Image 1 (cartoon, rainbow over the protein chains, first blue to last red):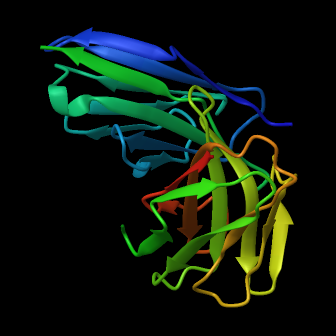
Image 2 (cartoon, rainbow over the protein chains, first blue to last red):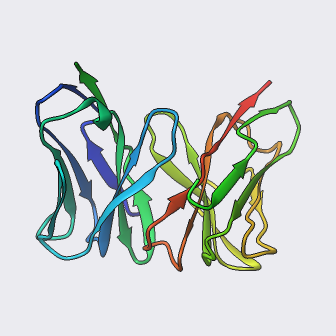
Amino acid sequence: GQQVMQIPQYQHVQEGEDFTTYCNSSTTLSNIQWYKQRPGGHPVFLIQLVKSGEVKKQKRLTFQFGEAKKNSSLHITATQTTDVGTYFCAGTNDYKLSFGAGTTVTVRA
Amino acid sequence: DGGITQSPKYLFRKEGQNVTLSCEQNLNHDAMYWYRQDPGQGLRLIYYSQIVNDFQKGDIAEGYSVSREKKESFPLTVTSAQKNPTAFYLCASSQTGMDDIQYFGAGTRLSVL
C-alpha cells in the first residue's frame, strides 16, 4: 500500500538557525498536506499543496511539492521556540490519506 | 477544539473490558475518522465514515468497532480483543472526503490498568 516516509524523525535546532524536513512517497500523490502538533496537543492543519512544483510560504515556513508529486519539503528559517512540535506530512493517493511518522523539533535557546 | 469534541480526555481500561470513546462535531462535515497515535509512529487510521450509517476499516481496525448513526457523532469502541490499547486516540472530520483538510479533536489518552 501507499507509504509516506518522513525524515529526519528528530531535529534539534539552535534558535535562529534554519532546518528542513522531508517527505517521500512510494506513489504519485494527488495532494500533500502538512500538519503541526504541539507537545501535548493535537494536529493542526498548516497547508495543502496540489500542483507539481508548487511552492507556498507562510511567514518563516516554506513548503514545496516535488515536480513528480512524490516528495515534499518544509523549510523553516530563523527557528524560534514557538516552532517546537511535531510536523507531519500527509499524502493523498486514490482518495486515501497516509500520514508520515512526523519530524519532532526541539529548539535550543 | 475547532468544532470537534472528544471525551473523555483520559480513560483507563481494565482487563477484558470494552470502553467507548466519544467524538462529536458541529462543523456539518460528512466525513469522520479515528486515528491511533503511538510514539514515533505517526497517525494510523482505525476506521472512517464518509456518510451516515456507513463506515470503512482503516489500516488497524482489528479490536475496534464504530457506529455512525448521526452525522455529528462517531463513537469508537475499544474491545477486549485489542490486546495493546494504550495509545493516544484522535478523532477528525473533513468536509467530504479523505483528501480534504482534516480537523482534529483534542484526543483521548487510553491506558490499561
